[in-house]
Length: 127
Image 1 (cartoon, helix red, strand yellow):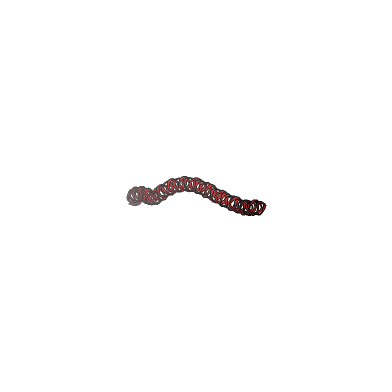
Image 2: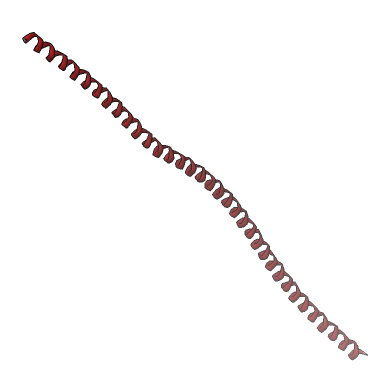
């Protein structure tokens, strides 16, 4: 009777160990599946962040290129405005020079007219 009880106990204990081992394997598999699901979920976020970063980098490069082109165009505009301003200054200088020459010519003309009248009066007086 004692030996049958020991056998019965050992059999039950063996069955319990098998059930416990099966449950342990299921728990490990479930933990592995949970870990994999969590990693996949995190990887989706990381992948999305990576794609967003790539888009931002591309847009930043494009913005930098556009800014450089705009700066270059602005420099060209500034150069054009500067040359236009210089041309206007030269035109003003030429206008001033022409007015000065015109004034001198009027002075000479007036002097010549006075001299001519004076010489006409002298020749009329001497006759």
